[in-house]
Length: 149
Image (tube, rainbow, N blue to C red; front, side, top):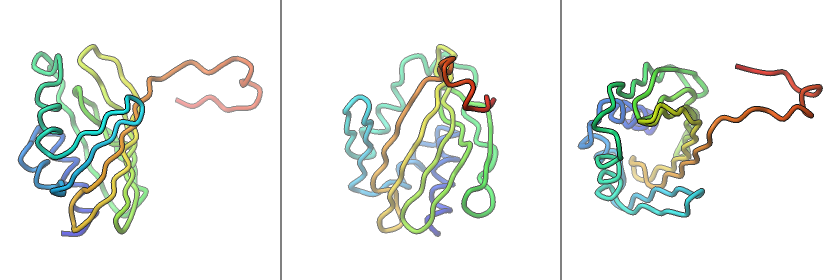
């Protein structure tokens, strides 16, 4: 299996809460970093414990859904979300991949996220994730920008 297929498999496993497949995609020395909080999560077992024990997850009725990750690099996809991830853009090659998307939390807030993944030996070895809430643009910039969706 190629690296891109592994990243796609990992995304699909997140969609269905398939923890065994998620774990199988991770390198034995896996490290997940949340720079905004300073947390470093070492190993598949600790990552899995965090996902399985996420507050409010049990009462959520909307599951993650990654519609498709298609084609070659820089293809776009979209889907609804649980308190989980919707991949909107997956890009990369070799051992470096980036995914961007949205995450919906149990309180129905939707944030943006970025995941930077480095693979080693055909597994996800390092992953860094950033999270950011949406915000209204400042008025002073309005004359310089186009307002997107």
